[in-house]
Image (tube, rainbow, N blue to C red; front, side, top):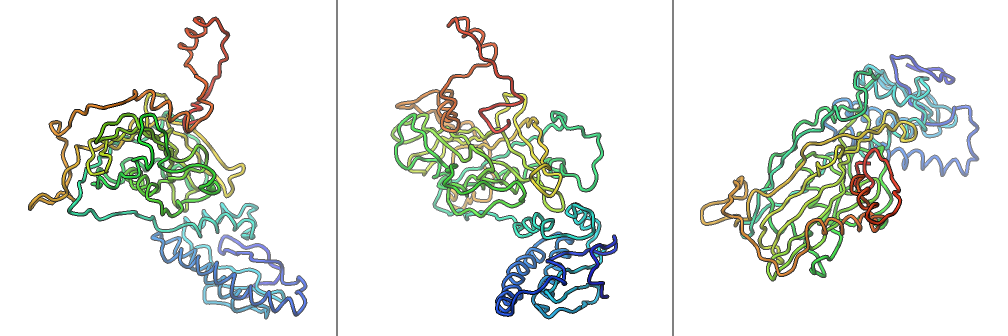
Length: 463
């Protein structure tokens, strides 16, 4: 079916994607047209089209297969074949429009996209004219091109190493602690879909090799009080990530992969590198002797809870606090624990998009997570002993297996946590007090009080 060259709208029965200026626009001079024709006919459609086809083929969602594949096919056929020749080249059930300046727009029946596809198209059709302009299509294209299969980082345990079982303890967010009015009706897909569905962790337990925890051990000084980074979180890690995305970037640094594997026990889409500072994971040597190190650490990370057609939803715990007791040579692990603190009324920040752009479409809230914890069940054991292979077995807790360690030097856990806070937040060089302690300290020093009231905390990511 051909459409009029001046047609700029379509009904609910069809989708039109605007890919350029009207056909009446005067073409460039012949010399320029040849170069532009080659680029438009091959480079742009091939690169974008192939990436979108890959998205459609690899996705497990029927909607994305239909939408991405059909749109990519139209893009390739229209731009790649029409070039500057113009004319109409219909495809059964689909349509393409071209003109003197090259292919301009394509359309196909909206019902072919299904209910989710219709909702998604209308969300991106900002001016409701039935046409996706390049400006309207840009946010969708970023999501399409970043949408990928979840990357799993796994390592086969060997028979000659010691292993430990890391167990997951998880209680979902208490929805009632959020300030959002859940009785209000919203149009289209529910942006809180992923949060409402997240009731259980990805796994209940997993076995790790002790050598997997090597990134927790400082590479240089192992003196007590020495602060260092497990995962670098500064500007050198590159520009901040956009909130308009679903998949974390691929990882190739051993420490980042370890943190990702641990966080993946909770949810399959952790972001080891956050969008906002302070980022990364830092640690401090709390205690040491000739054989073992006790290391306190702090991890800042977040999770993406949604997939298309829902807009991105970011779940950012205040922090992951933890400690590990491990042999200096990473041959044996005594204990490991990592958890979201629950000593404050609110400990999770949430941000989600209700539209196609981060500007003006972001909604935020804070809530309380009762439990989000990883811990080793027992001291590490040989992966294989005689005929017994423990690599795929749950290692049950064994209190008698826990040893008492005498340290040559140590600081308190409170002091270790203060050192980590100062590394993450330089303003913590100044001592802050809660209201009660502040009154007592002001009376003792005979000084006035400078009070700050917050809906959250300045020294973690729940604010």
